[in-house]
Length: 325
Ligand SMILES: Nc1ncnc2c1ncn2[C@@H]1O[C@H](COP(=O)(O)OP(=O)(O)O)[C@@H](O)[C@H]1O
Ligand SMILES: [Mg+2]
Image 1 (cartoon, rainbow, N blue to C red):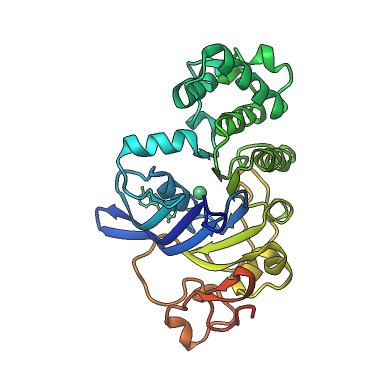
Image 2 (image 1 turned 60 degrees about the vertical axis):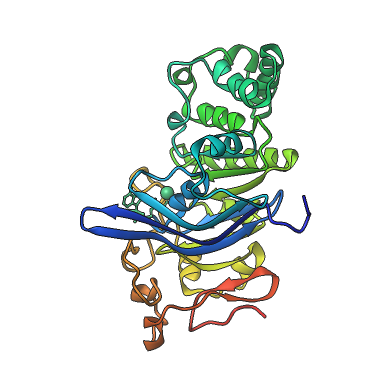
């Protein structure tokens, strides 16, 4: 593969859902690249389209959802491909971790079997070799007594340990890209950052690129190379971590950075201090989706702001601010 070629190239990606009253747009014309080995953070309030973006890349949208645009993985179009072809790519080069490990782990199957199946089916490994590799991976995600615990059932692990099992399973085939959708949100706050750091560390060791959705901006700042800020199904701003955190341009990004996450169980760390309600799925309305809550709002904001491109991959969709040049 050409080193310059992005691992994942998303272009003009839109996701719409059919409801009884018509179609709603959850993601509107989104585009970005992920390069090999890169760690990209995805942030935005609840409902901004983060999950649908990852799910559409994986071909896992709900049955009333339609994705249009292009998602190229190593140059191959993934969008709207037949399930069988996607299964092959998903099993070997592309993995996803969800918020709730029980959505991916089979409660009736020992962890050993769930882990080894990934290797025997996708890599044609023998049972013995697969068991050895799976045990080693459990050790790498720091599950104590991995040799013994590998034969337990998922419910015999604590929430944090289960999420470690998930990470082990997702990384077992050494995927080129891991999509992680708030993988630790259901866990104790003190455990969250620790597990995300472990995931990023393993990703680096294995050369796996990671796209991670999290509310924890501290984690993003520590672990990611770049960040994409989503709102109302559109990219508001994108750039290198230092630029976004220290030379913030978009009023929405400013709001996110100023907001202190409320880390109680009821809100799961949602950012609650930007005035107004986050905009949920909408029709294809013109204008900036953030305008109703924006202190800088002017007449021109009724016109959809173009996503301007600047220096070092900085991108900005705001009429009132300039992109870095
Ligand atoms: N199956 C569905 N049918 C209709 N709307 C949906 C469906 N799934 C998600 N949506 C809508 O898509 C929007 C984006 O959702 P999502 O990507 O889950 O947001 P988040 O950024 O919180 O992950 C939300 O407004 C949500 O209500
Ligand atoms: Mg989500």
